[in-house]
Length: 222
Image (cartoon, rainbow, N blue to C red):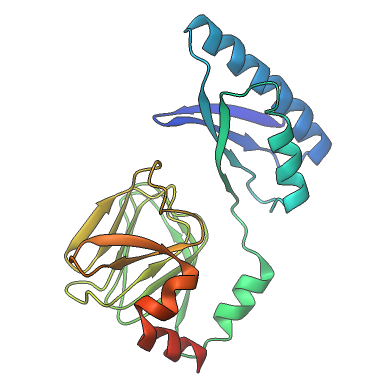
């Protein structure tokens, strides 16, 4: 059985890597998949293709990501737009768990389900497509988000939502909303969502938190 499987998406392809296989097997099967896609693209007279690499319960390190990127050298029109995993770096978990002001919730929100929280929440788990995570305060997500996240419900425009929302359906803060666009260059695995001065939902890199939300930054640093 192949250790890498290909799925078509509206913005390209997703390749799922089996964590039960060795990384060497993953690389071998990835090379075969890239060749397969190149053949298909040639029949359609297209050269470009975008990929998301989903490594499941294996967290790829930088060397492994570089090894995967190297497989694209024969295909200049191919691009990896995101690496995702269903696991969380231990350092990131430790830092957030050490923050005394943020209650922790663990679980899976499946399609058709909604979980609501009063105040801030650190949610560790997964929000499936069709699921909704809603809080009256800030939301910090550690895990895969494919559904809807709503921070600052119903009208706290100072709230933020932190997490990897690159595969989410929608992000809401107070009365603002963004239908997630994978081509939004501001939206990365290390960005957070906030309401900007024009009262529109926007994204910024996490290093900008101190400037954009100084009171929250100070609270988290206490």
